Length: 202
Image (tube, rainbow, N blue to C red; front, side, top):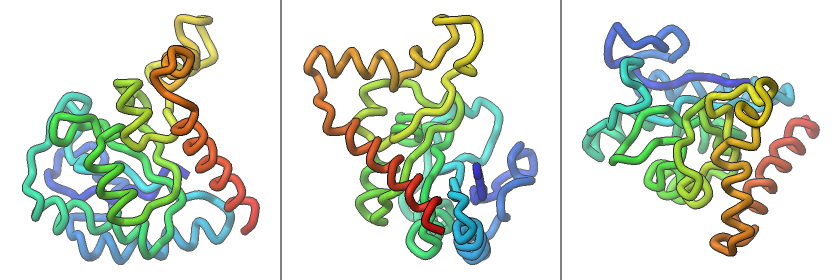
């Protein structure tokens, strides 16, 4: 399930406020844990979103969020951390916006350093629709599964098909050229397989 959403309310004009858990980091972190645990106890993977700093819909694909490390860790990340470390979330969805000039769906700091290294997340990282912008960053910076990059994958033939995703033909070509081995791909597939196994075991 593409939820729960735990971004922090920062403006009453936030277009996704209706689905987020509020403006208080502690309260949101207390609400998300039983939500994730309850959902996954029924074999449905929680996909906690939108990681992170997604607090405004205006220019959401271009905005580069500037925030101090203290504010990041004390305000914007506690609910995500609780979802991972206490709730055991099986998947996380990246946000559209940028942080430190890099899109969050393939942001090395957010995904590799914080989410996977610091928090020990071993689940699946999923892009929001159209949230992926760079094949090589997607390969190396922690993205596991790309959701629609401006295509439904079903219509208009090759011009609007899955093959044009950043992690599809472009990724395969880089492997064929020897720029990347299948090591990263194998890891992404393994995580997807484990997600499927977890849902079947409950």
